[in-house]
Image (cartoon, rainbow, N blue to C red; front, side, top):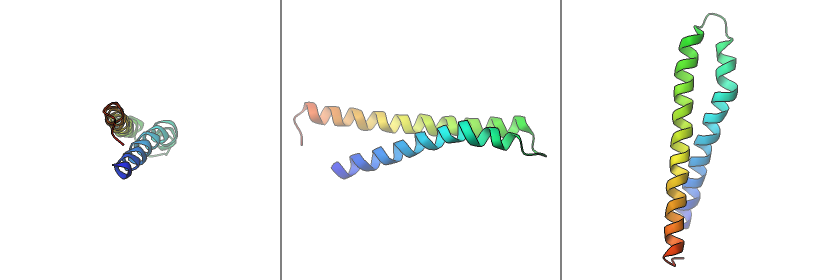
Length: 76
C-alpha cells in the first residue's frame, strides 16, 4: 500500500506541475511563433493543460482521502 501511495503522489504531482508549466510557459511561447493561428494554439493547449491540472488534483484528492480513511481505521 505504501508503494501505491508514493506512485500516486508522483503521478498526480507530475500532472499538476506539467499542466501549470504548460499554462504559464508553453502556451505564451507557442502563440508567438509566426505562421500559427494563435486562437487555435491557445485553445487546444489551454484545454489540455487544464485537464492535466484537474486530473492531477483528482489523483491527489483520491490518494489523500484513501490515506485519511486508512489512518482513521487504524491501518498501518
